[in-house]
Image 1 (cartoon, rainbow, N blue to C red):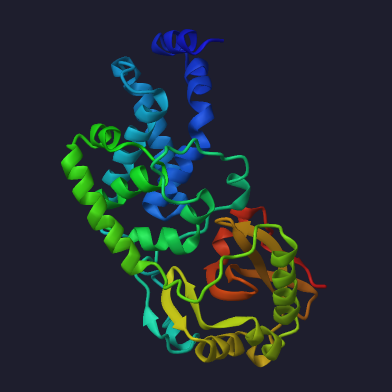
Image 2 (cartoon, rainbow, N blue to C red):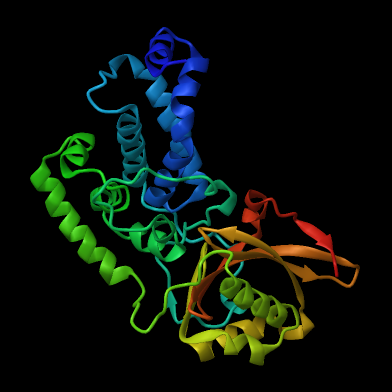
Length: 336
């Protein structure tokens, strides 16, 4: 059915027609909300709120902008409302003093609400980027990039994503944000400067190998062998000198090969051994980690996401086991 016919039916209250109109944009809008909020759960809520608002206000859609642009306008405002309505989530209320469970951190992280984005939901998302986009799709959903976005002021964050990630023109963004081109350009300049201060230093870092390439497979295989056998020598050999570990929602962060080696040594302490199940998150290699138990069952304890540079690992991000179901990973599995 033609788009005009679907729009007429949707305006008349046909829910199925509305779903057909909006379905092509759902995945990219979900990714947009994730970049804005840094949380997979919050992005899901924001997407549903966007669709509800679009359905309720469809009669006011005049068609001066495309339906896609109109939906991005609504989604962006919903995300801005979310960011402004409450101070961002506090660190997890642990119930116990986790400082007794983990080594002393190098520093405390800021974006403790960060969550991983399941790789399966990125499959087939091929955004029609505007000519002014500055970032590749894979880079713009990476954990490092999304983390750096989270500390930008809300309006700067929105402008940078709409301009530099999605490539909308300044006039389009001004219309979306009920602003002026001058204001958008000023916010973008400040956002770019803030982002560069927050992104990890790339000096001396090679690009990561292509997803699914033999080079990536080789690093992943070495990591799995080292982790499952608790081979600290082999594991440390895979790390860059400035390797970085974070573990949201716990705010502890660890920097440097020696510090991270101590962190991993504590994980393997008391004879603990793990099974790893491969996955992907944010376009990066990821693994469900399962602690082996003497009763023959391995219990899911978290998800590790690797950031690669050349043939080394420059960052690891650990998430707790609550995220495993998003990746189709079980809570437990038979020990190998």
